[in-house]
Length: 184
Image (cartoon, rainbow, N blue to C red; front, side, top):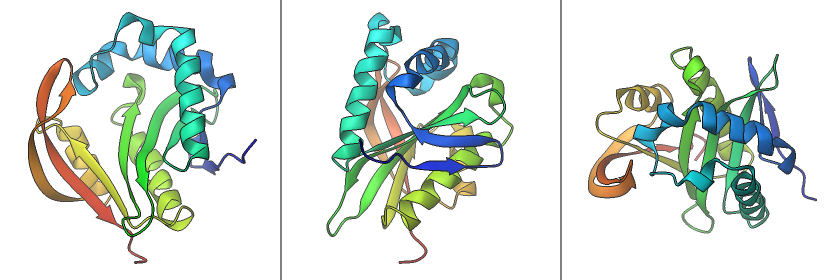
């Protein structure tokens, strides 16, 4: 089995999803189902099953091995509970050296700077260990928390895409942002 990256932050440990996290992942997603709903694709009922969690973890692991994604979860340092997720997907190597960032934080942790802590650590890994040049992140125009987070993380607005993603069951416009690796 490939080595999994592990990153310690002030309040969490970031690690890649593994089968041993299936029950914790299901709890994280079930407990935050309503909280996440406005910002995610519409989820079918089977998404909230242990079987689907196993399938997504397997897919995540295969993407990690293939070099196309790193799906980090943030485990609370004290409780071990999943409190956030920070996903780097659509990783492209060669002359592009870029990926997309997606993230979520538990409702009970929102507004405490935790998502910034987790995302900053993940971005640092992607730039300094994975060697990527660009990380892209998009947000809904009305998601002011994400807009502020991305600005604080050093992202710059690059554009606006109409009818870009199907979120909460509707095609939604997105604000396009990116951050360039300061090391070049």
